[in-house]
Length: 292
Image 1 (cartoon, one colour):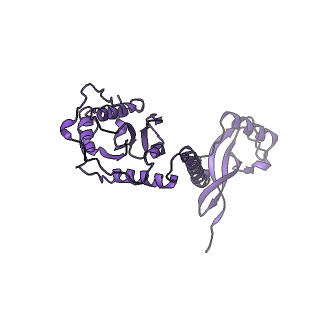
Image 2 (cartoon, rainbow, N blue to C red; image 1 turned 45 degrees about the vertical axis):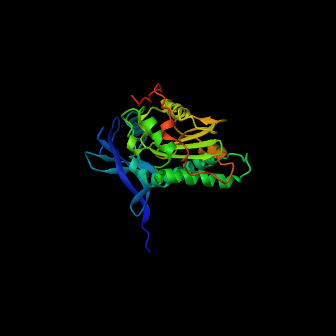
Image 3 (cartoon, rainbow, N blue to C red; image 1 turned 60 degrees about the horizontal axis):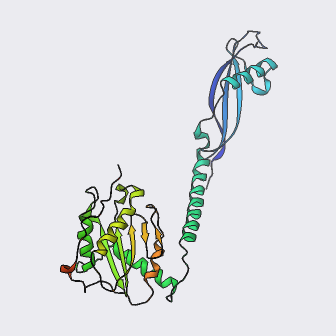
């Protein structure tokens, strides 16, 4: 394969050299200096700028002088011209280098983000179930939520949907909100996915947790006193609250704070022992405000 590479140059700027005299024809102030920028190219794609050089031509006798042939007056005039009206390189002289550097910075950024993310989400084992198993269970439940594999016969899901729908601002598309609930002994896991949560200002999103808690408390659930609530956005978990911890910043939340819900292998997929006619819906909940 033949590789085409080498040095090329392009004209950057033309300027008149004042207070000079042509050594050949003795004409004064007749020089026009042209500055060229050199760059290394590969397959005619500029990779990196190399240097600049100037050539002066006498407009009277047309004799041309390379920069190394400049007289002292010509060089001083060129220096003055560069200080007041410099010949700047165009960005495309180094476009190849930029195209090479940008992916490197992207890779470095992804590596740093990955390290920070995994360090932040490294939750220690605090129950009898192995940590990897609990993470797997949580990830599967979140996948079910994203895939909308939620059973309409789930009493909690239906009641929660009806309660929340009554208080959300109309800008939030209620039909796209997905729900998943599970019971584990006296614990209740509540997962929601709100893909257009960006319509709610970040600092106001924690009101969603308050709304969910209000709705659940109004259901008078027997033998259930610990709630594990997680809200997913379009790309990541945005809100988490458990009986002992919370992450309510509204932008990024550690979903693995919910792991304590999975302290046994036997977890009920739905709650069918709740009577719909025994539910009290709290009417004085606060509405969630959208972004102005």
